[in-house]
Image (cartoon, rainbow, N blue to C red):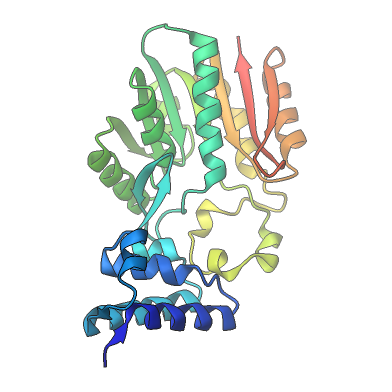
Length: 286
């Protein structure tokens, strides 16, 4: 049985609202399955929806109601004005992480000016959102991205190829690939797992049941990976270097203290995100 576009949309909105999910997801999914822009969708609301498209759409709405993130259903998410493929092997890029990229570009510019090529590593790259965006925004960077997960690296490589970014992808644990090769870096950027394990109990199941745990959780206080970085960073950084981390709300002081202890002369700053939560820590080492 066919339905008109507006009937399908009304059903999805009320169904999701009743199930305490975001009712706006109905429109995103309808646009995805019809291939329509927002303006065209609203102009053609009284048109019939093809039965096979209706079936796909209704199935997707039910999947979201069960907690599957809309980005995994659609298969993509916007980041820094570009579309990145995502799947359950990678974390969905968040708007806050765009601020990490912006802050990195700004500091590289002020620290290194117009100096030649700079070697930068993105550690725990996931979908490749950070590494690919940095390379496309600042082509002189020689970007290497690492991840433990084969599947994440395959997704990141696919995104780099599609978006035309020359990034080298290496499988490895944190900075181990650079330590073993003896490569020295001008910058290390990372959005590592930083959520305390106990927080899992209070988080939305849309995140905990579907996004990869190894990209989310890091020990009792969420600081395990930052501690490991403090051991490894001095082995790979050049004398003048930039370190940039995304952090969890409330971790700014702890992570900046770790960096100050490891690099006593560095300029370390905690940067708040648009929601006024501590979200990034940068260390300028000279």
